[in-house]
Image 1 (cartoon, rainbow, N blue to C red):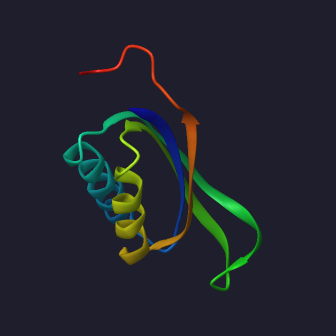
Image 2: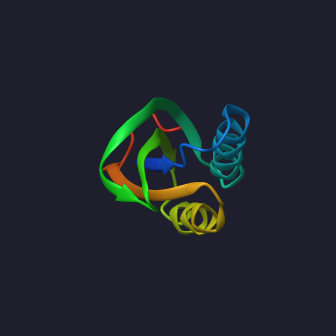
Length: 102
């Protein structure tokens, strides 16, 4: 398994319950597809450098997880069709994770 990081920019108009629902749904997809969540890091509301959908603020969430490479396509497909997620980026942090869970 490889280690990945996905950074999400969520709408500032989402309630805390809706944000938690989105994050829970994404972590469920990761775990369903044989991935392992390492960290969910809520960065909170931040000012943006330029307007995104005519808004100057956004809520950032960083997901760190171990997963097979095939999971990324399914995760990003779900991110694209989820309302409330403005932008995202996925980065591979490591090719092989030491101490893999079999």
